[in-house]
Length: 345
Ligand SMILES: [Zn+2]
Image (cartoon, rainbow, N blue to C red; front, side, top):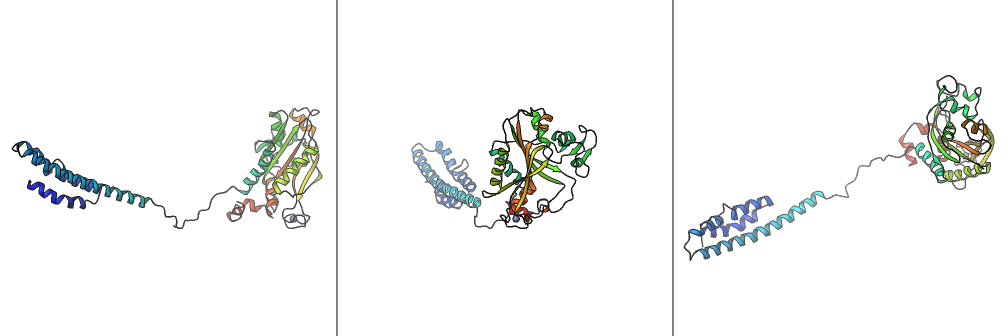
């Protein structure tokens, strides 16, 4: 046998085994069987050999080349397995490593309270609308049967942007009720709508009052709506929002845009009627105002006041949230102290 082949046959297994990566193995393969290898040289020289030697040398070359190919394939498969294992190890996730605790965001209590209130009415088939926070005097007052000399229109209660005639008078809406007029102007009866939004009053901040707060307005208009419908709707709402055993009572009241009008109390969430800090003693908490829509309001928006009836209600969102969660100070809803807000996830 050609001494070069003998040498190769002796050295090749060591070279192949020493290759510690797929790249190194490729280089070894080039070295032992590639174009510059002794094997290639001997093959190129076959033509110069005497005819009787050619098949013998050719067979020897093939034999050694085949042996080396088997060694290389075996080593390659070992190296591929190792590479795969290393990749899996590098990608592995250690589930036992302690994690940094991150605070997750949540809806603000006012937002979630609005969502809960609105959802209850949506469940009854009401639509949801919103409207401008800067209103004209006409929508905020005149359309709602509140004459020019009504005390609510005084500067001491209302925050004015621009004085003038009712149509030009611009103010920060004192209630969500102007949307009653806007909605009825844009929609023919029957109407079932709730309107959440911010309202503004010239008030000093104290435990239960704030110059900016949120209301949800409701309006239902059809041909035969009665006070019984109003009562049934709000009793259903109170049980859904405050809990199934919640009692309600309707006290006669006055609002310019409803007749008759009522204020609605619910049994105190904090004490169930025995008296506590939330209700201030009586066991009842006033939560909303309501009444049958005054025909003058229908006339103002162009509805046929002889042909339709309806009811309206408005509730303060902060008051609802406080009554529901037993908060005694409105500032808990405004300070955005995460330790407080985090309790209402
Ligand atoms: Zn109470």
